[in-house]
Image (cartoon, rainbow, N blue to C red; front, top):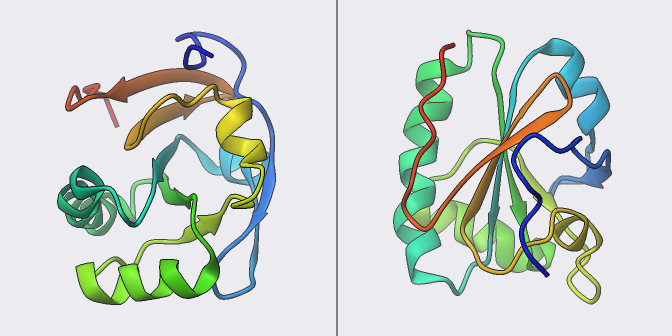
Length: 134
């Protein structure tokens, strides 16, 4: 399945963070742009990339931009990953047996990054970053 095309409406979802809080994409979009970083803890590129997104999270957290990771692992593995790689931005859990959100976004590989603007998507993957005016 190909990744969600650029400009397509972002599939709405609700997921829990690894510490049990709820995240609703609709609510986050009401506050401004959302950056979704899909990852798997065993992915070497993800291990390299997520600390970079941590730096972006710190730099833009006061600019009405929401950055969240979407883990394809369970809460225990995701928490261990966050500790090991110094990730403090919210990490959501996509159900690891079915990956409903990853599938809704048409993921074929990780890391894959979606930029959701007013409910419409842009995508960056395979080391290509989309430059955005914030």
